[in-house]
Image 1 (spheres, one colour):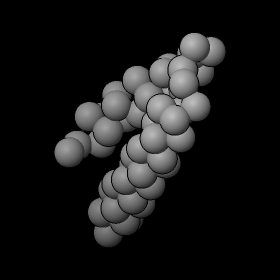
Image 2: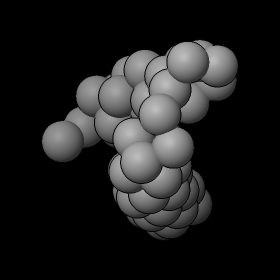
Image 3: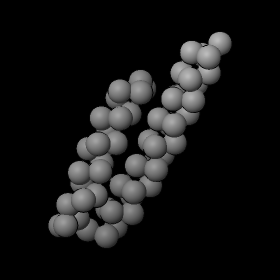
Image 4: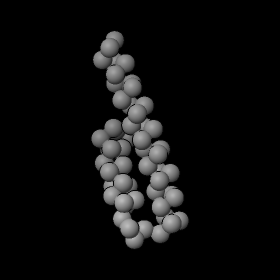
Length: 54
């Protein structure tokens, strides 16, 4: 998965999380998925930063 793909998926999840009609069970799953995507994006950014500095 590329950074851009992960970011787009994260944006979609955030929109769903912010929807007031989402069920609580779905909310927990979407928040967990969003946290995983955030971690992935942070890792990619750190990797890119390291490559740029090198």
